Image 1 (cartoon, rainbow, N blue to C red):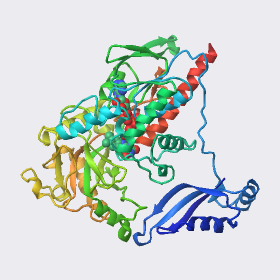
Image 2 (cartoon, helix red, strand yellow):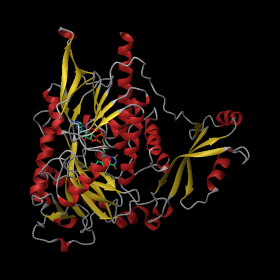
Image 3 (cartoon, rainbow, N blue to C red):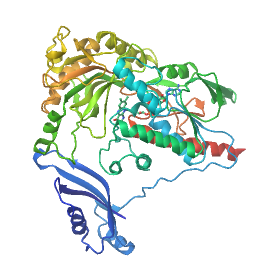
Image 4 (spheres, rainbow, N blue to C red):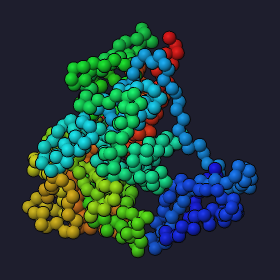
Length: 552
Ligand code: FAD
């Protein structure tokens, strides 16, 4: 096939415009064009009154014509042979498989690791501390409605991982020469995701579709010989020393579950997400090498979606192909800090995302339709270990401290502290105001909010940076700094505050057989990159198992 890139067409083009563009670009006749697929569809909205669509297309013509066209357009960077998009398994389990690899965590990373291992015949055992997704949904929505937190079954923990109740954005900035993201999308579509995620430039799925997809993927792993256990928290690991002197190493040989049961394996992946603070501590106390890493802190901001649509799309706001508008903003502040928007959810809601008691944490989610009244996004300030000296786990302590103080500020009942942008920027204390004082932006956070002086929720440097950034963002998105836009705090779980270092074989740099993976280990940020990391981990585990069997 031939790949044509950068085909630009007006937003309202008709069905015939694409084949016409192909014929005129390649100079071929309608009879010579056998078929074409849309590989990518994006848009350029820099000029609101003249938004156009940008396509990347894969074209099928006869083999002889394809060879001829590739020679004719050899110097044209926008006309190339379509790369191989198929995923190729790197290994197959030998008949005499002597151990089953274990994957701890059934979020996007553990899911794709488990699925890929199962597809290669390794019969993985997958463990998650939380419940299966339907039970977990009841617990999570129960917390949002009734303020009863289950610390093992919530937004962060359980089947599907942290992104299950989310906007389900599937794009990532990771370099992906091996097209792993294509495998992820293909698996998601096979499990019920809409076909369009294969080609739209910013695919998203939304919460309810994710729930049923995760169930289908679980069934497929089991069908292929994998085993998945819920309510199975890993509380301890078993290590043994190998070699002597300079050659001395430690390696993992098994683990202990919260039930007291032990499982043996020399290949164990930890895809535990960024909120498994107790497990990070356990791994650290066992001597697994862990470093502190930068992360970000801030608030969620809410606007009416119509404000964002008008700012981004002008007269084209509401266009069905464009959908609800998103944004991505960054501002470098005078105090040296950077503030940026993060995990923007068009047409969604702000959600309570704690996994620990007496903590308040915000995040965002939406449904596939993205048709809720408000847009929300984190507005966060980057911080690094200089801001939290005190060892590899000090960032976790800072997160916890901010989340606990947000809980108290919000009234110590899981309501979140909040304030209008107008009051926050003017430094007004809103704690005497009631919710009737709010303007057109009504809070979507469940269980509820309490109006406060939100500057008390973050360190001074972060408050100063956000106060400088919001007016700067208003220059890019008109209405961003509107008085009645709403801030809710605190956003602290932007990424893991630690990194569990691994080497080129994907194993911990000081513990053989332990594969730190996904967002919790510092190797992913978001659903897609975590899922990609899961595939890489599965490949590394499979190759190592085969190597060990071959060496016997
Ligand atoms: P996780 O998804 O966190 O999964 C880790 C799993 O490990 C959990 O299921 C947990 O129960 C389990 N676990 C932890 N400790 C143990 C233990 N000791 N024993 C057994 N099991 C354990 N990203 C996007 O790309 N797009 C979005 O739209 C998006 N929206 C989000 C909305 C919300 C509300 C949240 C919370 C996150 C969102 N994210 C989004 C981020 C995304 O969810 C994460 O980046 C992603 O889930 C990380 O995947 P992971 O597999 O590495 O870890």
